[in-house]
Every structure is written in structure tokens, then in C-alpha cells.
Image (cartoon, rainbow, N blue to C red; front, side, top):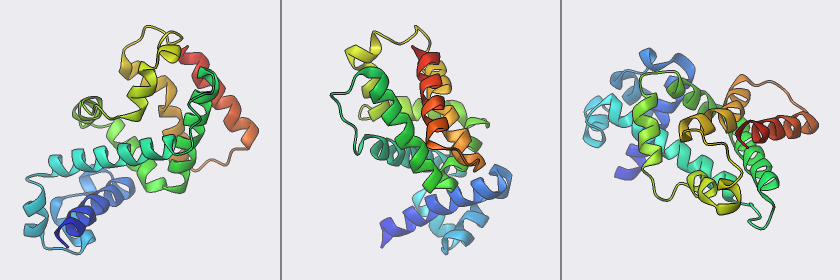
Length: 182
């Protein structure tokens, strides 16, 4: 039951930030959306910053799991990238609140701490792919944040926008993102 309340707080924050931005996601509003008392929200998270980072980390972990769920590791780097990109896009398209939340974080003061938290996760599947020798050898010598912006940020932005795209367009966009980083 306690874990359910913590999940409800993170989910509520994600929903409110996606809908109203960070200013519309006070701890009181988050608690109300989660169906818990404000004090209960503070039992799990000392501050709004802590909830934001926990929700971001959770969202990125779910995105990574979705991207890796059906990945064929034997594919050549460009095909593996396309499969990851498309899986990310499809997951975010199916979960637009997640895409909108990630987009809000990317354009806020939380960006730095959120990326730091994500980069410190030794089990991050995206970082594991970047470290694969066949992919690492093909990547441009950009900082990881730049590679992320060129590779995955377009998938987040497109999913958050709700723009309808054909499969052919998605393939072209994924290929363009691969060309940008390789």
C-alpha cells in the first residue's frame, strides 16, 4: 500500500506537469491529484525536486525497458538504432503524458539534475547501447547530452506533439537521427 502511494505521487506529478507545467504542480496539487494528504506526499519525498527526479528516473527506466523489450541485438548498428528509436517513439506515443513530462523537464531547470541522475544509472539501456563497440565506433565525438538531443529528443518532441506520421515518415526520421549522430 505504501509503495502504491509513492507511485501515485509520481504519477500525479507527471500528469500535472504534462498538463500545466511545473508551476501548476505544487506539492498540494500533486497530493490532491494522487488522492493522498499533502503530508503523505512529503512522507515519500522531501521536496518537489525529489518527486521530479524520481518521476523522471522512473519515466526514463520505463522508456528504456520499452525500447529494449524486442530489440534484436544481432542487428547492425543503424538497424538497431532505428528499432530503438521507433520503440521509444511508439512507447511515448502510447503514453503521451510521459512524452509531455519529459519535454517539460528538458526545458526546465530540472534538466541538469535529471540528466545527471539518468547518466548515473549503470543499468541504463541507452547508455549500454552507446557503449556497444559497433555503435560507439560509429558515433560522432559529441558529449552524451548532444548525442541524446540529436538521437532521442526528436522522438520525445514528436510523440508529445501528437502529430500523425506514417510508418515511412517515422523510418525516415529515425534514419535522419542516426545520420545526425553517426
